[in-house]
Image 1 (cartoon, one colour):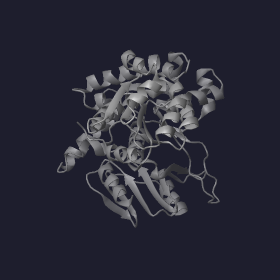
Image 2 (cartoon, one colour):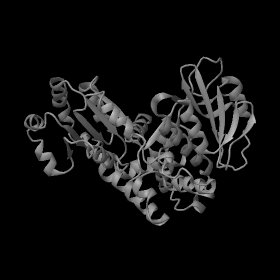
Image 3 (cartoon, rainbow, N blue to C red):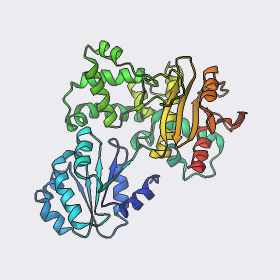
Image 4 (cartoon, one colour):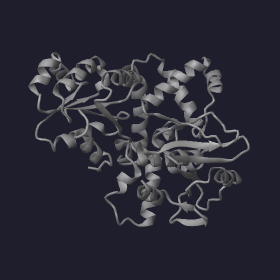
Length: 395
């Protein structure tokens, strides 16, 4: 069992909120983590709302919750039964205690809208990502540097979905991700209440993969698909709401600079990105045009998965060419992160110009190097492992 970083926070939130919502993409480990937590609680009951037998137990929800009034109830795949939310609100208000309900969901716009209307102030939401790099290396504190790099490159290639990362071979991992994509398009999207031809949505998803790490250009994609810009925006919203796509906004500040306003778009899991691009092994990835942007997206996702919602994330780019891949902001504090896939990274003039504009507290150039080293005052070239440890110290 790989220990998930979110475990302690879920335990704590169950003592602070009447309900806790654990959201994340399909197959990222929500159910496994929930069952692990429930095994620690003497009085707890788990229902999978995709199983007819469990769903039948909720035919009379009032009677069910009355029978389990003093227990923690876990409802898995809650987005399949949004009509339960008004009833859950009344139950939580009536009981007036914390730790009464744990809901798991593959987030959908409908679910989030429904729950925000009815459970506001009663529920705290947490996002579970696929495996983070820090999670898969946590049990190996004495791992050698070269082994750490091998683990990282495997994680980068396969992504963090448990069955993909833990597969017995690259071929098996790639086949699982292909099957995941098909299932998502054929079944999961429909469960989100969306009626889009799967061929169209797959083409859009693949276009996003080819545009990974680039500025969002709705008109270009709309023209390629033969649909309107609002339609393309709706497609983006679907994949974003299902945790398949990350939309990273541009930095917003009054710096008297002409800032690029369009966001950048990433396929969140690198393994899914590589499957969409039909890259099966590391040799395929090394020779592909998206090699550098794949590394950038991997670093961005690992950093944001690690720091959570405590830091506001954006990228910085001006019309004059100053740019930085990731800006973390908390109050007046600014941290700058640039991603370079080379083992001998050389930041561009645009990066140095961005640092002059922003004057961050600290800046890093993240690259697949073996050890960190400074290249200027408050600017360090660093491996991803070391950056995550540094960010932990700065939380």
